[in-house]
Length: 315
Image 1: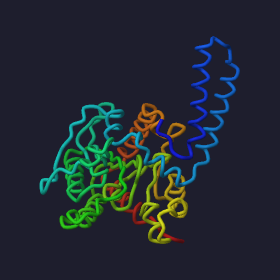
Image 2 (image 1 turned 120 degrees about the vertical axis):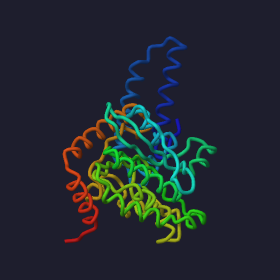
Image 3 (image 1 turned 45 degrees about the horizontal axis):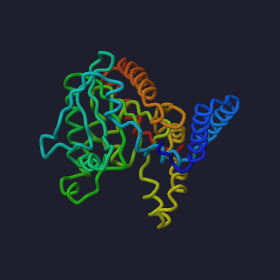
Image 4 (image 1 turned 90 degrees about the vertical axis):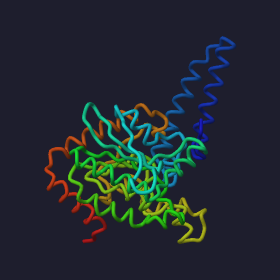
């Protein structure tokens, strides 16, 4: 198991239980009462650990290497996915994928950040950090969705937009700004789900939606905890403290009205039971699209604009 630091007591107890079960099998000794006692202790430990997570611990879970990514959720929740490529201007940015799909026979357009599972794929996907051509590809797909009157489902999972020289030369800021403007007036339902990391403008560049949901252990923030710590304290080791003050967890975001819904995860995170997480997410998507489908185009656009204009208002 790929465990995080705070999960070590859980992993050690799980290992002890497995060793005891192996010993019982080899020696033919009845120690079932001891196994049951340890399993009950493990369950209590899990509930205590995952029921009292700090903001930094949730960030760590959001970055877990086994956590499902956009392509995984497309495979689990949708059918007949046809990927479309390129921005019709420069190239095909593989940090963002998208295309047509169906969810329970309902046609949709799906878009999302895509990370890699190994070094080779991460280099190809640029660790989920999109270039301007990625945001232009996303906008092209959204405009296709509007043309064919199809709802849009967006999966967000990025540390942030790629800040390299080439990306800046090709208009990174302008590409994101254009998406922010255009998404406010797209005349079809838009649902965005932060499934892992929701970093800065890289996330917001495809995040203007009628419904914004965040998985229980995902985060959504103007800056990463490490970046915030480096700016405020000139010390990256202060990242856990920064995570707390940024209020980037799903419960905090819901309380502040930044998001509309927290999507529950299996105990320990989405990666511990991907199939169950996929089913939960599918039901969440279906429910929200059904609600949004009842609204007329003019009402959708008006409410979406009002939603984002109202964020951060005091008094």
